[in-house]
Image 1 (cartoon, rainbow, N blue to C red):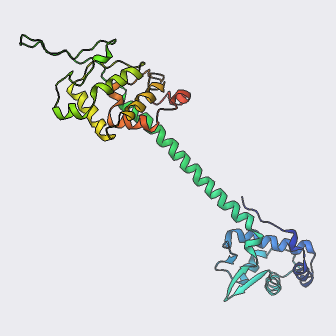
Image 2 (image 1 turned 180 degrees about the horizontal axis):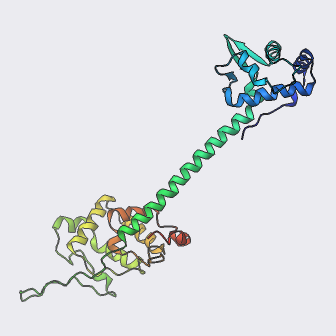
Image 3 (image 1 turned 45 degrees about the horizontal axis):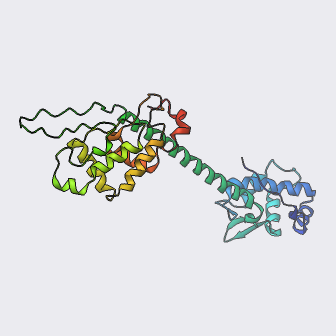
Length: 287
């Protein structure tokens, strides 16, 4: 919706000269200006330049819109002579257009900024919606079956069993399953899994360390700068998220292997699941 400003200041000497020269009333003179200004919102630039228009074109704007006793050509000539319209090198300008119609252009810029902001907001919301939908669909079928027990060794001396009791978390160590010596030294598998069992009490316990599980832990350990505090933050965030603990439409819940996968660990640390406790209802139909 377009609108123009008619300032009280226009009721001065210039306006008196106009309506006296035209032989009309003050109200009629203001009406002529208003008609041209309304037309100018669609045909003039912000600095008042009337684009690709001559005096005859402007006169046609007034034709049929003003009293028959006032000649449109004469009105345009007087508007230019008195200074309501400026002419420079054959180009016409509305005088002080940036002053008279400043509110319109400021408001239009505000509307443009608001529209752009709303568009970006919708895109972000759509992106988050699709991200959570895809993430949960990808990860909902997590294999929770326990790792198979190793076959009995033919050696007289039994090999250490990887199975650990729930109540004996401290016995989980780096030597539970043989791995390359370099990884045993550089990655504290036992400390990380003990930290998980201690913090993530709402999730399935880690009872064994397979080669595949150790490989994944070592990869995250290197990626996050070999910093145990990162894993502490990871497990703390997961424990605080009711969404990850099963408060969702599918009653799906995460586990240790899901948390330490490359993509999921990044999402948890980034806070993607921090506020699912209060907004879970919004995601009931997306998993």
